[in-house]
Image (cartoon, rainbow, N blue to C red; front, side):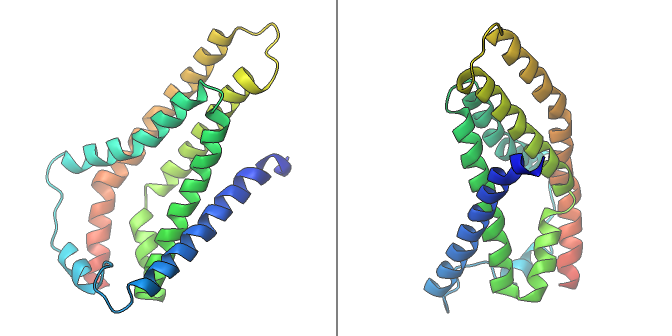
Length: 192
């Protein structure tokens, strides 16, 4: 059973390693320069407030773009490869975030990283993995296996219904990131 998750885990891991290495190389390149977010910028964040729904809509649009692109790719023969590239990208992003926080702030950076991704990661991670699984299955069943006797339109409708069922959970993740996370982050930065 675990063998079928080998390739996604390896791709995520490779992306994470690439992100860590590139963050380290970038820190070496800009060492001594005030290019990265530092203590001063974090101190300024302590006094920020989120006004209205603007941040929620920003988060929603930023998070929905990759999922829509992958969903559209899933209806083509490129869908399987799009899912694999997405896993690589998500791993890269995680590695870059983790390494950047550790390089800039040491052990305190781990707590900063956890604060940055809490609580929305508990919703986004499973929803994204299930979304990628559905998109991979749709593309694979449409283009990479013989679909003898299967109605392609029916398969697409089934997968789209599954994706639509996931969408409210995705919105909950956006609400958590847009409204709850800023409160937690500002509270954490006051003691950071």
